[in-house]
Length: 267
Image (tube, rainbow, N blue to C red; front, side, top):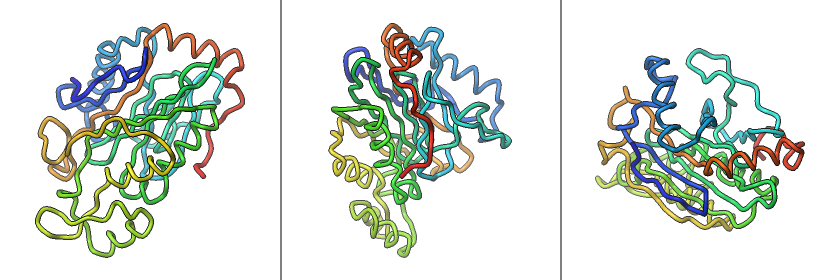
């Protein structure tokens, strides 16, 4: 079910699923009831109790949503195949509430920061080529710090590697002009983009420690890859707290510790 899972700080977990967990996306033509059942099984495996992972309707942008008690939830995307009640965004942060990001070659990023009395500040980011260039990664870090997060760390999940991600020369030049670390050449000598390297460079520029980086989705058949098969599912990057810690964070947020923070456009 998990390609990688670890207790990254006391009472805080991060993980990335694999094909054993099944497709977790509602927008790829899969049976919605089957997807929801897989999500429930995933929540059981994570030991969430009555809590649920929050998903996003991802659009390859730089919007950052804040979710959870006291945060002011974001409007749902009503389009067919969208997650009802989910924010339309490519990054999501919370004070202790479990979060999920879905990918099939783009870079999934999990973030954790110390949050003081309200509980840990958690974040997930979907960083494809457009989002990387648009600055979704530093926007998520900025939003987490606006919630009081300190001592931030990141875990970069599996994604397509630079050796496999071939793009036109002009596209490489455009992205590298914004994120120089993303410039690369593929294994066959053609223009490429190294999205994980670009993500790492942005995180390090923000003073965020990168604790883990996963392998290549196109090379690993235990992971979904759109470049390998365009009719594919999505795996997830996850972050959550132990049940007691999560409930304490939600109680603190409800009491006003994290109140007054609402979703808005990334800056």
